Length: 256
Image (cartoon, rainbow, N blue to C red):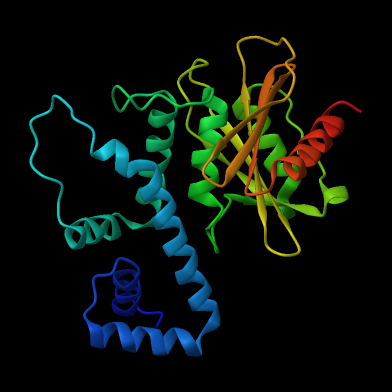
């Protein structure tokens, strides 16, 4: 199921847009192709995470005179038609706007911007099987140099091997709107069991160091702090103590 037609049917299955016979055919195919089944599970998990984050925003009252939300099938066809690049771009814009509360009253983040943006980015990119990062860890030197240039200060990718996590790679996120127009760096780590952590790094207007602070949204927990020119936020679906231990390791790596 690799041609365009079957790929579309695969996405239609994820979106719940197939009839009973078509669903059974796809499920039989997935049972025989575990790699594709894992990809579908990741898509479903990502859809669920995004719905939890953005559905309340879509349902809020607003002053714009627009019609009702499109039917699920029409919306699914629309997003599929955008293609992977455009969908990622739209998602990035949404992350930036939600982080600075631009969708209207009542949606301001419960935690400071960097912690909220870390939750959104973690939900968006961690479920990705094939493209969780833009630049893989195999090109770490290029990744660090690129992100440092974009953030305007030397950036380091901490080693979390002592906690059992290896660098998976990284990507750029759009500016959160609170600190000029500087973009945000996302570094992703993964352990042997496939569990992932997201480390967000962004320039801060103040270089005053701050102690660790904690935030939680659903099952995602975040420790965040300021150290030198950067603000950091470590997000993961770990218990608080385990995540705190990794956050301390990050801090120690940045302050030897």
